[in-house]
Image (tube, rainbow over all chains, first blue to last red; front, side):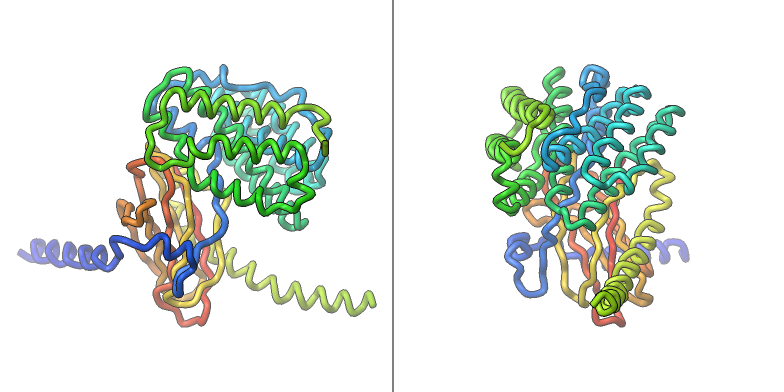
Length: 273
Length: 142
C-alpha cells in the first residue's frame, strides 16, 4: 500500500514538473527579440563525426573510398584560403578516423600544425597536433576524434582572441563543406531517404550565409570567398528546406557544388584575384 | 604613456577575467552533469555556449540536430541556490525533448530527434539570488 502511494506521489510530482514546461513556444518571438526573449546569434557547427555516426548506424559506408589524402596540402594563398583549407583538413581527419587509417591521421595532424603556423595560431594547436599523432599510433580512434574537435575549438578561440573572427568562421565553413561533401559521397554510393535527410541543414546554411554577408567588403571581394557565397546560394534552396524530401538528384546537385568548392579551396595560389 | 597603458590593461583584464572565470565555473558544473553520460558512450563536444542572464529572461540557441543520433544538453551555473532550465523545441516551436531534469547548479534535456533539422534550445534562469546569473551549456551525442 505504502509502495503504491509512493508510486502515485512520484508520478504526480513528475507530471507536475512536466506540465510546467511550456509545450509550445513562439519561435518567431525569439528571432524578433521581443521583451523577455533573446536569440543567440551563433551556431555550434556540428563536427563531421556527428553526421558520420548516423551513417554508420544506417550501414557500413566505405570510408576509405571517401578519404582524400592530405599529403600535398597548400600552405600558400591568402589567410582566408589557408583558414578554409585548415577547416577541410580537420574535417578530413574525421573521415580518416572512420576509415581507421592511422598514417593518414598522422599526415593530417602534421598538416594541421603547418597550416596553423601559416596563420599564426600554431601555439594553440601544437599539443593537439601531437596528441592526434600519438593517438593515431595507438589506433585510439575516440581520442583522435576528441583531439580533432579540440583542435577546431582551439584554432577558433585563438583566432577570436586575435580578433580574427572572420577567419575562425572560414575554418568552420571549410570543415562543414568537406563534411557535407563526404556525406553526399556516402549517400550517393547507396542512396536512402534516411541518409539523404541528413542534408536538411537550414540553420547552418542560414548561419554561414549571414556570416559571409557580414564580412568586410575586402574579405568578400576575395575571389574564393565570392565563389563560396555563390555556392551556398545555389544549395540553399535544396538544403535549406525543412520539409521537402531530399531526392537522389538533389544529393548529386549538392555533391557537385560541394566538390567544386572544395576543389577551389585547395587550388594552389588561390589568392586575392 | 606606457605606464598608463599598462594600468588600463590591468584594469581591463581585472574586469574581464571574473566573467570568463565564472562562465568556466558554470561550464565545469555542466560537464559534471555530463559525466555519467560519457560513461554511457556520449561524445561531449569541445564547443559550448555561455553568458549571463537576468531571472526569467529566456534565451534561444539554434541548433542543427540529426535524426539517428541522440543528444544530451547539459547546462550549469556556479550560483548557489539558482534554479536553471534547458528545454528543446522543434522548428515549429513544439516541445521535442524526451526528458529533462533540474538539480542544484545543473539542468539537462535529452532528445532523440524525430527528424533532421533545426531545433531551439531554450535556456532560462528561473530563480537566482543574483541580478545576473552566469550559465554555460555543453552537449554530447551518440
